[in-house]
Length: 227
Image (tube, rainbow, N blue to C red; front, side, top):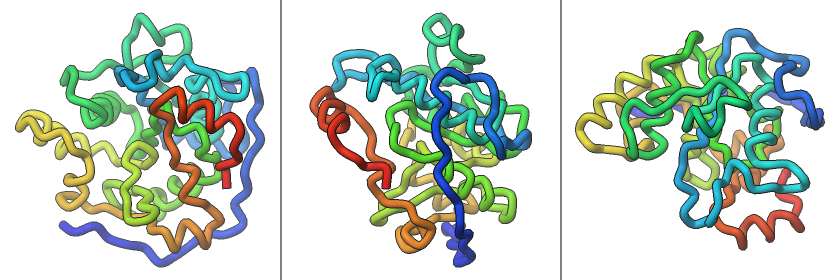
């Protein structure tokens, strides 16, 4: 099944300010129908240190991701190593080890208590709460299995909303040794949020920027890429 596009747009969404020390209290607009999963199980080889615990503007990337996730739901979990992350939130571990982010998505969806699930990589610190709200609105109003931004023609599968049944396609691919997420969007009903729609809604492609190296981290400290 080919990805489907939606022409309906929502306007007037605003960015919400982070509350620095509150991780387990949902902000206004929290949705009990959604579980958020922060993917934090990467090896961080290029960074030279665990990405989850490097700091940007005085906060670890994990702390920023937890705040962001709690802005839309009280149901927040971390996908990664239990020993490393259990002090911060409930943890889910991959069933398919060392198989990349697709395994993390699979583990999240197989354990989720809700139909709608926000997947968020720990290393995308510039995504605003309003984008998450925007994607969740799409998911609540349309039956697509995956709701995925596609700025500049490039999928953003680690900042997206999935229904639990996407785990079936993920598991089939993982068992076959296929780990690319993007190719699965042609096999399920996928709603792409294209560049034009993102721009109209007030979102810049820069918000999807991820941090892979120390150089990128240092550069991000002196730049405003939130819009």
